[in-house]
Length: 202
Image 1 (cartoon, helix red, strand yellow):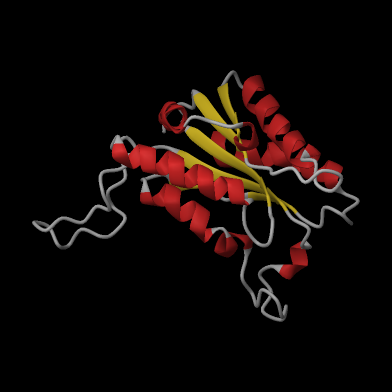
Image 2 (cartoon, rainbow, N blue to C red; image 1 turned 135 degrees about the horizontal axis):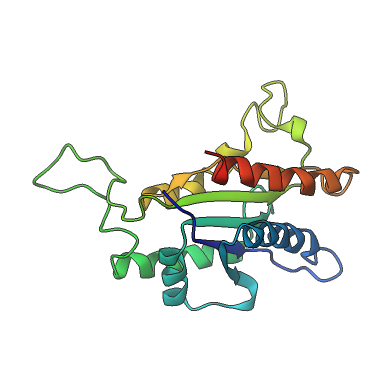
């Protein structure tokens, strides 16, 4: 990618009144928006909970050089509304052949690998997630629950969709232990540093 012109920010928070209102994820999305705007990069936005038109989401993806999913982690995955979003948007992108043309395999070329039919090469995808889990729960085989798995392992079902369509997967950003963490302000500070490092540093 030579020059970043547009970024698509997708907020997939699902509101649970009086419990999970979405303020933290909205704040991270705003931080990303402010960062890219300050670099004169156009920002496209989708708040899944507010509704969307699949064909329009396909066009947003096609316009964007970068797609960032902003998500809380509910039961070790994105909220249920995001799976619906993926099913509808990616099916539309398959039907129009804008995201991909099949799975890449052909009867005339059996050596082509499954997942090589994407048409979104040159685009980048990243997840920014908020977790109740503490950071030390990940990447540590002595932790009984996750047994050494890291956040990218848990998000494989999400990142695989974008890789399947040809996107490059960028190292994600995580805000851990959100109910007990007293350093969330630092997480915001470090976020802009992360965005600059993974997208703009040459």
